[in-house]
Image 1 (cartoon, rainbow, N blue to C red):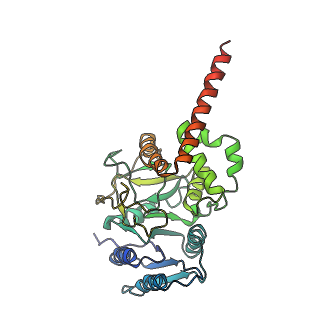
Image 2 (image 1 turned 90 degrees about the horizontal axis):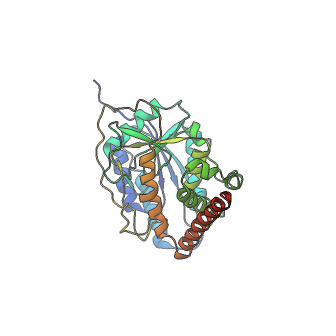
Image 3 (image 1 turned 120 degrees about the vertical axis):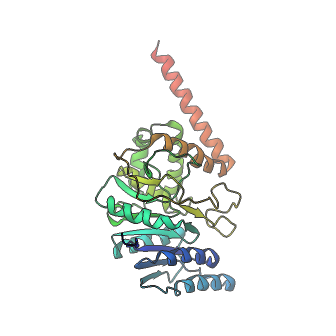
Length: 324
């Protein structure tokens, strides 16, 4: 049997963190993808020599490609916010290729991550039920199935992969959000009042541009199109970027920081059906997303609890009046 070789293009999202970028690049270098697409932001017009040096040093790392590889660059000329830079960069990536493995500048994959993505990108390339593949597992050591992976409604971005066919559904402006919100679609889709409340607040904050991000929009796009994510039964990616210099991950004591990775075994054992793992999703909502709630401002948390309590009281009153 011939030695496995990576066939999928890799996209790297970089900016001004040369120390972490160098480690990610070394992981990419070991995998030797045939095509490397690099998306980079640039600094604002405000002069900042130390940051300019970091940005230049980060881009210089890409010049170290020493294997047979086509390198394509999408470097911003003017500063773009996180949302605009990443979604425009990924739009560009999927104009160039029909599939890609995506890594940000602080996400270190286990060596088996590459083959995991590569094989499953082939297996599910024409299956519209699958929107993405992630290398992240937040089940805290719980192995959910005897298979190599399971299917989830939740997707994560610390090492992931998708296809052009799925990215075409991405709606950065969340154009259907207000309609879906007012119709109670989220409550029907999630089936859990507390989870629905969490996501309603999250999507609304994103829609109102109170947070500069691109990823909540991708999750909503996947859900609207009934797209599932493939999740490995072991964690394949570690985020080493939790520090003061990060955009969204500034707390180095966060339990998600520097998570241990494990090898996934080959040949992969595939599930016999494409069915969402409800128990794993409930655990993830509670342990991962509710944890994020605790990081938000006290005002937000109190407001959210008030809405949940108010709705529970309204439901009780309806029940009382219905029996009289």
